[in-house]
View (cartoon, rainbow, N blue to C red):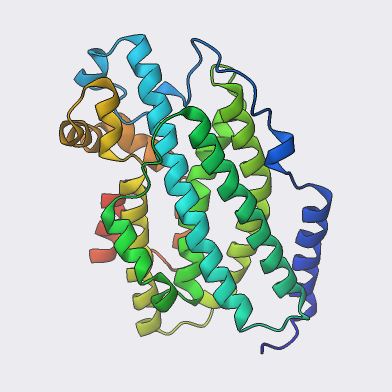
Length: 300
C-alpha cells in the first residue's frame, strides 16, 4: 500500500472531493431524454466536421450535412465512451495498489463513479440518436489491449489527458451553441463540468510522475504518449460514418485526413493540452516521436 499523501496533495484531493459532492449530475434525471429532435438543428458544429470545406462537402445538401453531423458526433461519443472504460481500468488498477484510507484513493474511486455515469450517458445518447455506436478503429483497440500492462505513471496520465482535454475543448464550444440539438448541448455541459476535476487530478499526477524520470524512462513514456495521441485522434471519426450520406468510407476518410480545415480543428482541440505536455517533457523537441505527434494533427 502507498503512504498517506503529503499535506499539499491531500489538500488538492480534498478540494476535488468537496467539488464532486457539491456539483455532480445524474444523467438519468438531469437530461430530458423524452425531448424530441429539433428539426434543422445540427448535432455538431459544421465547421468542426471532418469534411467541412472539401469538394465532398460541397456536394451534400443541408439535410445530408446535418445527418452526417449526427453520425460524426456519435462516432466521437462512442470513442469517448470506450476511452472512459479504459480509463476506469487504469484507475482501478491504481486503486488496487493504493491505501484505501487515503483521500487520493477516495477521489480516484469518485472519478471512477463519474466515468461510469458518463459511459452510461454516452451510450444512452447514441441510442437516442438512432445511429450506430461506431467505436474506435482497430489501431486504437490494439493499443488499448496492452494498456493495463504498459501504461503506468507519466504515460498513463498523459494518455488520460490526451483522451480528455481535446474533446473537452470541442464540447465547451458545443454546449453554448444554440444551433445544436439541446440533448447534445446538455450532454456536453455535464461532461465538461465533471471532467474539469478529472483533468486537474490527472495533471497533478502527471507532474509528480514526470518530475524524476531519467533520460531512458522519459523516452519510453514519450514514445507511448505519442502513439496514444496518434491512434486516438485518428480514430475519432470512423470511416463508416460517411456511408450515411452515400460517400464511400475510404474516399471520405482520405478527404478528411487531407482536409486542412479538419487538421486545424484537431490542432485547435489540442491547443491547451499540447503546450502543457511539452512543458512536462512528454513531447520531445525533435525526432520520431515529435513526427508522430505531428501526424496526429494535434501538433502543428
